Length: 145
Image 1: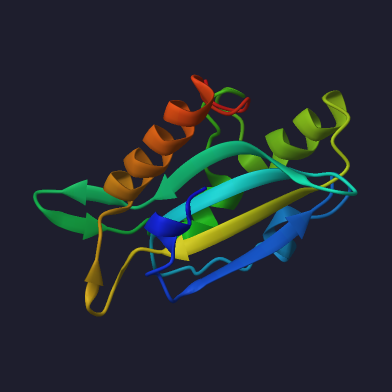
Image 2: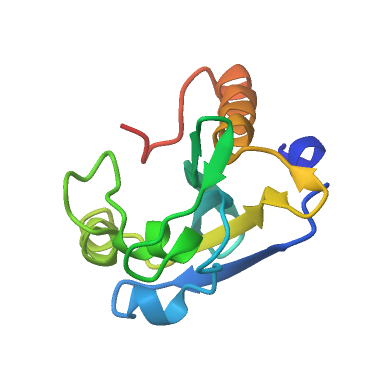
């Protein structure tokens, strides 16, 4: 569904996470770059999108990466607050919500959108992905506020 938007980003990856694991140890997103990420619930025969997110802020026409904590996208995924789950760091809220919602495993795919000759601001790419999803399903994924 998102291939047309995401195929141009060459720096990318993913990791899986289960509620009993340590998110900081599992997360392989970069600490000095920004981009977009998609969080999926993993089922035996499919994956279901839970959330579309981004890391990095557009400020005065420039991209500003997170510099606190672990830095970059990794810090956003591990120490950031998830809008639906309140002011609780994701390293805490993700396992709590997964247990509460009976989610055994999530998979986080990430793409760096602002690097070398590719200079797409993460918020612009996130907006495109959100629009594609909303146009198709007439709503946002379940972990959106």
